[in-house]
Length: 81
Image 1 (spheres, rainbow, N blue to C red):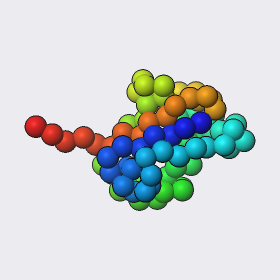
Image 2: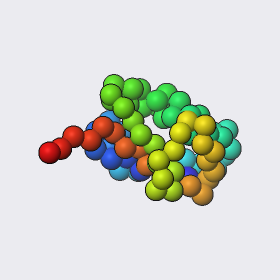
Image 3: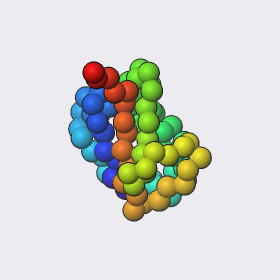
Image 4: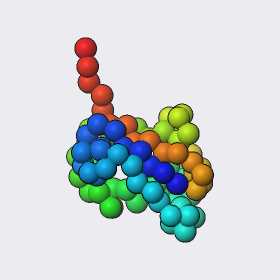
């Protein structure tokens, strides 16, 4: 599974993407499980005021199922004008 990071999330992680092994993905059944895994690995992500997660280009809820072929994107708060 590939996890893409944007904006402040990319700055926190230090990379625009992360590969998660198929073995690890098997234990991460939902977006919520993945969120917990990533917050454990990168605790500073918790400092963001919000963090949307998209699965295969569609926003997903914490109970959404995931699998190892999915492309995941972490989208931090966006500001603009």
